[in-house]
Image (cartoon, rainbow, N blue to C red; front, top):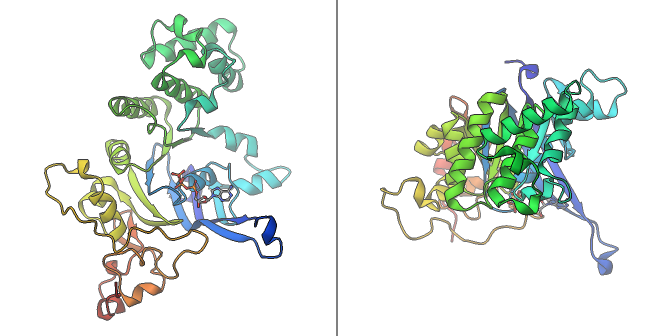
Length: 352
Ligand SMILES: Nc1ncnc2c1ncn2[C@@H]1O[C@H](COP(=O)(O)OP(=O)(O)OP(=O)(O)O)[C@@H](O)[C@H]1O
């Protein structure tokens, strides 16, 4: 597959934020938060990739970088072979930046934030149609909006079309946000914790709806969640991949079934241990496998493998950074344990 066949491809992407110091620290250098470090990721058409990791590991920053909302401080991001930021900076790019941004949409955890509280559902859904189908008249737009509302179970559609966001439940708002994004005919939707705020009973419904509409609209999803169970459900059902992030790095990625059946990175195993509903029948240790529960400061991440300070399998060798290693079809990890002949195996275990 060439890079233009991918909807989005990230190559060696870094996003480092310079944090200004407080008033009393005016003379010290700004501190750098390494939110995303050296991540490469390709998203194809009709693809589903779910990113999982604990709060602050860089999921949102990576997602926003993939859709051209966040400019990387290193590496490149391409949309259908066109460098997104070159498109913004150049006069006559092959694919203009506006078009790139239209093709890469986002739905947030709080759907209220993407819906204008003063605009009716009809109005919120008309705007994207006016952009993508300027030839449609008011009647045709209304038909299309009603059809979409019916499709997502919001009936009678004329009633819902006239409602304002405060007259909708959380699940209904999220469905409107999803339709709104889909009506832009996007190639990729970043769904950032899009089901996390919903009642547990509604999450599966929302994810099923996302998948059903994915087929109809021919779109891809980059789904972000701190919940391994939700991420595995969505990406698993779509035959997609799951990516595990830790402190700004993508430590493992691969097809869902393979990663869950054969996790390679100790952090993936820890996340699985912390998600007992993935395999409710399997007995598990009650003690945390982590060496320490303290999460390192992202302004000063551990040298070498970033997980080594907490990793139950850490050895002296882990104080240097492991390379990304292929362990199966589309399955990679960043851990020395994936390298059979590495010095890691003869290296002493780390003291407590
Ligand atoms: N604009 C910014 N300026 C400075 N630091 C930032 C900025 N945006 C994010 N960060 C920092 O970058 C790191 C990654 O944040 P990010 O929101 O991407 O993580 P996350 O995994 O999505 O977390 P959460 O699930 O809590 O949203 C955090 O340490 C965060 O504080």
